[in-house]
Length: 78
Length: 78
Image (tube, rainbow over all chains, first blue to last red; front, side, top):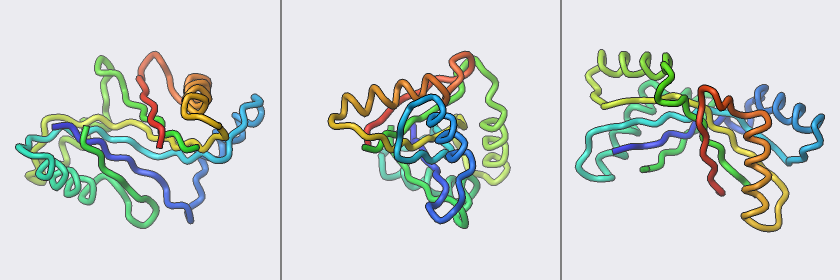
């Protein structure tokens, strides 16, 4: 079963990539309110149920994928 | 309106970050079939309708966020 892990920098943390994208878009005349740049990881795990897939993905995300000091994450079953 | 942009390396492209995560998980006894590591960008655009937000996000994604040679992307209205 495929699970997506969306990881974004916490709002308190300076998101330099996001600022860079905002500047570039501003220069090109494309207006937007804000932009945050993070990571997206697609995991393919063996699981009989959505709950099991969710638990496995949570374990993996917390073990190795995200840094709780500066990032927050969200899971989605695909 | 917030729009999420999920960007993943194309399957034909070697995803070295994904391989590294797979190896680390294998060593720790966490089994998974596959893992792909990409980018996640959350845009906040002014738009009256979902369609308008979608169009604006598509324009931004294709202008600056993803590289069509090695990546594919997907949009989601949040």
